[in-house]
Amino acid sequence: MTLLQVNNLQTVLKSAAGDVHAVKGIDLKIYRGETVCLVGESGSGKSVTALSILRLLPAGIALHPRGEVLLTRRDGGVEDLLQLSDHAMSEVRGRRISMIFQEPMSSLNPVFTIGEQITEALQLSWPKMPEKVAREIALEALVEVKIKDPQVRFNDYPHRLSGGQRQRVMIAMALACQPDLLIADEPTTALDVTVQSKILNLIDDLQRDKGMAVLFITHDLGVVAQIADRVAVMRYGEIVEQGDHSDVLYNPKHPYTRSLLKALPENLQRQTPQLTSSEVMLEARNLKVWFPVRQGLFRRVASHVRAVDDVSLKINRGEIVALVGESGSGKSTLGRALVRLLEPTGGEIYYQGKEIGNLSSQDFRPYRTDLQVVFQDPLSSLNPRLTIATTLTEPMAVHGIGDSNDHRIELAAQLLDDVQLPRDYLWRYPHEFSGGQRQRIGISRALAVNPKLIVCDEVTSALDVSVQAEILQLLLQLRSRYGLTLLFITHNISVVEYVSDRTLVMHQGKLVEAGDTAQVCGDPKHAYTKTLIDAVPRMNGGVNLQPGFQ
Image 1 (cartoon, rainbow, N blue to C red):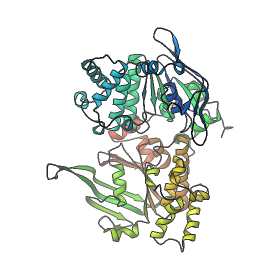
Image 2 (cartoon, helix red, strand yellow):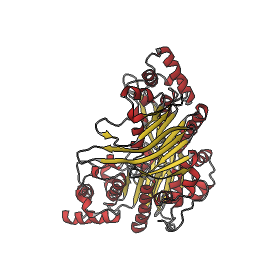
Image 3 (tube, rainbow, N blue to C red):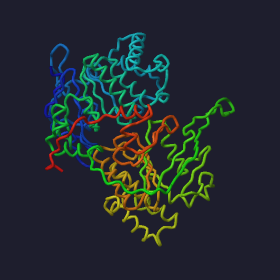
Image 4 (cartoon, rainbow, N blue to C red):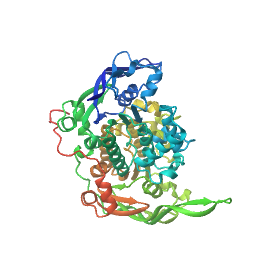
């Protein structure tokens, strides 16, 4: 039975630069109890479609010149959500259709407890519900989503919870009102693979228990293969292909769907591994990074958080070494400590045989050019006030690279050539670029001082699959061209399998497994590594991409 039917929906967003046709006449049908995945890259119109269904876009800015959003009531009647009054629409939200947003930390109010926020959602849907009843239902919802210590968490504030716990709270809030349809907008994008697996299983269990339908918005085709009954592929505001998940994923008809599937790391053509040297480029011996926990009136050190605890490793010249693990495992802390962006608490760091872990800032400065970092979020790591030209030439000037400013500008232009960006981008600012373009600029900034080793910290985690593929291939090309050594920090096992020579697995501040990537990913020895590998959502079976499509 049809629950929701979208007919010729159009959404136009008004702006000073002119009208943006974000959704261009799409048709979509969702049946009771099924999961429909809406997939596509950033900017394709997925989230705008979901917000249009619930009429959550700002009035006066968002218009719907044409279309219907037909919702079947529980009594069998049908109503067009676009024609309902604001009051009637407020009764639909929560009771009939609930939504989980992408970033739970920005969706939860930091000044109210978890329990207060769930009870508020209930009382907005049922204004006459007594406070005691709302609290009981809210607590039951936390139990349903398997929050540990729900009585305690009920009175906690959002900042006290992990990313996975906050996402469970958002699911509890959405399901407390017993909706017929749950819209989940990229609910697992920022989560580790093991947490993602638990959230997906949770949604699936709750869906079967409650018989609700799910519209799941994502760009992760591995997730789609795992959960979808039907799939709709969106591009530039249009649905270009839709059908049963087996047809769309394993025998795609549209060139755009094929291009998305080709961009998956497991479908990329693997390059012949570069011959690496036996020369040790970077070595850590019993490295520790501990952060003090201070308590009491005088803020005395009561204990330590052992972010990196007695870690030893070697990275050879020319290698790409992947460092994997969940959030909080110590990956980024270790990467930053190796290049002295964080000061180690103990242990030794050797670069080309020279001990650098205990050098003063002044003595370490000559090594800064050799050891560089590309950060996860290029927008926050690029100065918004500086043009790209200044961003690239400033470190050159600091380290005496280039004979003059004109020479450095030419070197900066050559860097943009290397990362496949137009030279005239030198005179633009960071906000004028897409996420993938900013990440290329972040890579070019790291290359500006002619480094020998680059730490890549989750550089593809927030990118669409096609942009991710471009960045990975770019890094491999640059590795060959410049003879780079890379420490690639990530939690994406598919990326690890494609890009790395060796893999290190980190858990609770310690290295628990290390070896050739094929061995670690194909035949893991440690229980934690096996858990990571088993949690990876994958495309099962071959994909018929038909060579004629590029």
